Amino acid sequence: MAEAKDNLIRSFALRLRDRKLFKCVDIRARISHEFDPESTGDIEKKAKIETCCAKVNEKLTEWNQRESGEIHRILVDEAERSPYKDGAGSIGPTERINVRTDGGKLVDLKQRSRVVANLDEFKLFRAYHDPGDLDALSTINAIIQGEVQACH
Figure 1 (tube, one colour):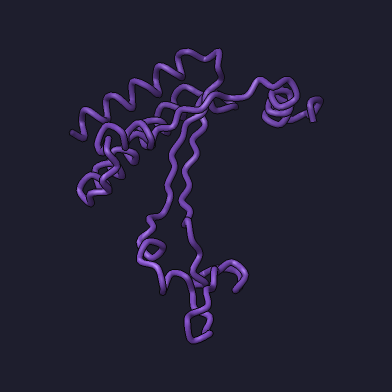
Figure 2: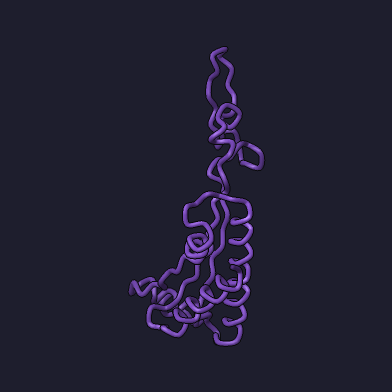
């Protein structure tokens, strides 16, 4: 792979081989700390966090399109995952946690526990940059700071 003809494949194969991995900036964590430092989970604060993350993503995408060549200088990663799969949309019953009631019946843990039933989806939004690309890092930081101020 390190000798691949495709520049992108070759570049990332060399990075992996030589342990020159991209550095991570956890954008959602930084924005969440700005709007909800005590992690109260307030609906209005969550909405601001979502809006601000979307604006940061938009600006990073615009910058990448303008400033990057064949290989993007900033990589963006967004994901959502549920901390508990209740069977709806899951692959099978093995992904669900069943508990036995006093009557001997098996029921989904989510039906028996308000804590499990109220668990929020975990969301992440991260940007990655080459450790030597200080311009990309300063751009990520500037966009985050600018959008946090604009969203306040």
